[in-house]
Image (cartoon, rainbow, N blue to C red):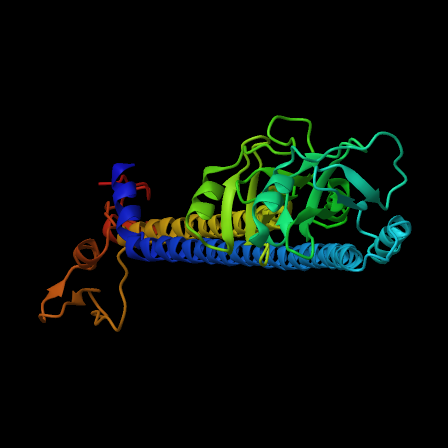
Amino acid sequence: MNASRTLISRFVPKPFLMRLGAGVLILNLFVLLTGVVSLRQSLRNHQDRAITTAQNLTLVLDHFVVDTISKADLAVWAVKDEVERDAVDPTSSHRDRDAFLRRQHERVPGLMALRTTDTEGLIDHSSGPETGPRVSLADQEYFIRLRDAPEAGLVISKPLVCKLTGTWVIVLARRLERPNHGFAGIALAQIGVDQLDRVFSALDVGRHGSVALRDLDLGLISRYPKPARAGTAIGEKVVSQELMTFTHSGRSSGIYRARTPFDHVQRTFSFRRVSDQPFYLLVGLAEQDYLRGWWWEVLLEFIEVGLFIGLTLAVFWLIRRTWLRQQATLGNLERLLGEVKTLGGMLPICSHCKKIRDDKGYWNQIEAYLNEHTEAEFTHGICPDCAKEVFPLSSGRHRTM
């Protein structure tokens, strides 16, 4: 048995099997590497599309916010001009000022209200239907700033609760002046925060995406969606460290990836300072949304590569088994052939004594020649015809010598 195994191993072409195995390994590694490179490229494509989408949405929202504020400011300018013109003309009447405010309001449907105050901060005219005691705005920061700083121009407040309606609003206000440039009150327009919420909710940012508008101190003004968790209330400043770093860098726009502190969702954010306005816009697309298609690609690629590797390994195993069987068969045949010695060619033999002449010219007995050149062994006996000739007086029986 050991001799047989030695013969078989001698005939197994180990370099061939090693080359075959190395070829299969290299092929599988190449397919695996190709799959990894393809998935990495696909991942970058998905990320680039998400970045492009987020940037486009921030541009759209930037135009919307700027347009909304510009229209509101034009209405405030119109009210300011009307009030200051009345102050110059002593014959003018103030009885139609509320009607004028309503007409201006109708031209800017995005506004919640147009109002004016006197020097004490009491609301004296309004485009809204509010009735009741006059409300004072003297304690509001924007009123104090416009009263004390004639050069302030347009002042935009942080989100605050309207004293008349109880809703969250942003106030855009300008100073009213007398002919001698003395303080005569303010003209203001109110934009409802809920209007921003409706616009944000109309954007397609995915199931886990978000849109937010923040002031320059990163206080929240509006956000979609509004989960009932800490950090989403108006005015809250719960933000990621990445956003803090971005704002401190002084950059007006850019892209960053962060996990939002209050909902722990990983998003790719497009960050933008609203043009010439005290706001930041942030559009975040969740990785679990825009990478969902990519994860399906990973699964399909994994299945395809796994099937290919399994197929090549199965083929390699079959080839190896078949080859080993063939080599074992060849080894057995070689072993059997090694046990058999054959004679070939023309053998000179004496026609009388039947001796065979070898290659050296010597005449040998036929049994000696065959014994030397084959594995056969001879025993001597006598045939019946020779027995009659050699032993004519015997009964014809003979024994093997």
